[in-house]
Length: 327
Figure 1 (cartoon, rainbow, N blue to C red):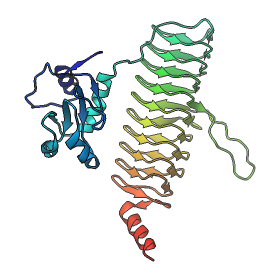
Figure 2: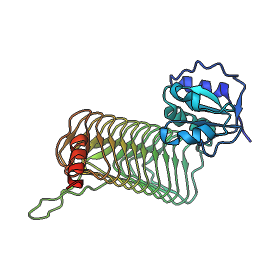
Figure 3: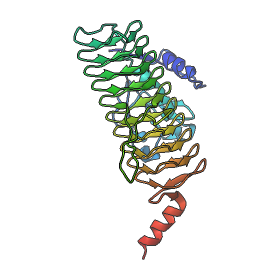
Figure 4: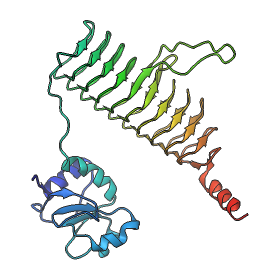
């Protein structure tokens, strides 16, 4: 069993500009990173939610990532590792404790089909029964799973992982992205002239920034002209619909079953709860939070939190819920 030393934990956190002043033996080692309830005597755990205060008092872990204000709740057997944001530290350390990162084996399957006009760079893995179509370029260390179709008109940059049964056309995928199984990127959007229902042909593309994650069975339609855009470090969950010409900023979090209608512009650091619906041609500012199942029909300014249908300021929405409940 692989063990992780505290010195490795320090190093990993420091890479992300997180520094710890605790006087802890750097040779202290841990078998796993685990929850408070499940942690054993050789595990590292974390505490980030007051809901689990009772479990914190009874936990068996060797050490705990914790804020200073909760240290006195720890049992004597558990060494505190005092940090400002335990949950952020957890997200960083999951990669250290689970280092089975998928790496390209550089093998192109004999059953895959590659168009003569496609360009394949170094150490690219293409699994069985996948198609690489014309005018597509695959850069270094990319992994393409089985039964996937890439192209036409696709550029995939370094270290991208594309899982099984994915189709990508008319798109640029930047470095270090993960495209999960069943995703559909770059297809024709839902556009037509309303009276005659005559179909509008989409000729644009999709641009996905660095370090994005696109969930299973999510669809991102190509633009009518120009680009549908997903900003860098954005996390798009499963079963999300992103329509033509939508622009989502950097560091967005979009939960499952969200639908975003065409030409809506969404800012940076936005969080959108599950099953929310956003109408087309809207402007959503930076740092906005949209609660689950909200229906957004109007523009939202920076730093707002909205809920309900039609979506409104969450404080006003809560007051209305209370008022309607006591009638």
